[in-house]
Amino acid sequence: MDLGSCNLGGNADAVEFCPHRPFRHILAAATYTLQEQAGEEQQQDRAGTVSLFSVDAGSDVRRLRLLHTVETAGVFDMKWSPTDPVLAQADAHGRLVLRRFEQEDGSEEGVVLTDVCAGDVSSSMCLFVDWNQNADSLSVGLSDGSLSVISVREDRLEVSEQWTSHQYEVWTCYFDRARSNVLYSGSDDCSFSCWDLRESPSNLVFRDKKSHTMGVCYITQNPLEGNMLLTGSYDEYLRVWDMRSMVKPVNEKSLNLGGGVWRMKYHPSIADVILAACMHNGFAIVKVGTKDATVMETYCKHESLAYGADWQTSEVAEHNTDSSVIATCSFYDRLLRVWQLENLVNHPSF
Image (cartoon, rainbow, N blue to C red):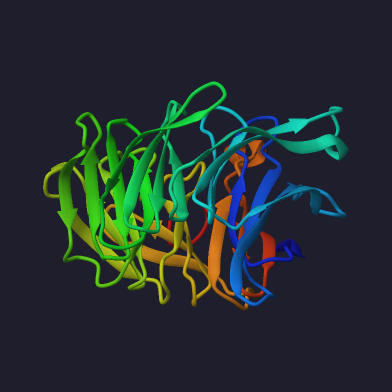
């Protein structure tokens, strides 16, 4: 069931629900728009926005309401901190920006994003950002093939390490949720890699170059089974990895989703259900079981590249997994959509 939609005014590429009480109804949506600037020397500027919305699936009117918008450089990725309502933004100017969600007068009319700190990471573009579980470090994937690890101080960001990790763009990076010294990365060079951050420079634990036939776009970890990783690729496959042997992980199973697998998000309360953004093929709900992976549902109401996708973590969903609220966005049509998936636990796939 569709709950609401909005044209974001720029090319839409990321959506993230705040996971923290009492702000779980807050949705951040980001844009990245390439702008040609007139003049003797034609220059290109990459502009963007971060907008905050209130999502209320139980309301009879205005289920999706715009609260606040920040003008910024073009945003490639953003993530909420695992410990606080702080949003990290990776942008096209090579900067990492942290902003805190605040309510100035205690009402939604007073909602703002206030700057916490920002730092220049690189002269290249910041394409992806991920927090470690303690929220004292962030990893950033860069357009020149480098990875950066950023330390978060009280009022500043410090680049603690930066190294050339891949031949081409690093589309994704991911801290292992149980081992903070382990960082995974995926690149346009078709490789899926793992790094041990305890050494400087970081030690390469493994690099898989043969499994993906196109660039690796996304990496995520099963929240209950830490030895299971998923990778998504431009080659249209979601791959499931057994990580019990860190030196040589095993590609257990693969599922073709009919479009490049740009984003994958685990359901907040159903551990084997995935929301996937499949670029030219819309969005898919996938069940990744112990034996196989299957598509449960698809959502194809966007008319452009499916990029951003996220589940809302809600108190209702924690007690009633029959109802799940989802936000999705698509690039060229600049569209944000919020919709509700019903009867998930009663689906035939279960």
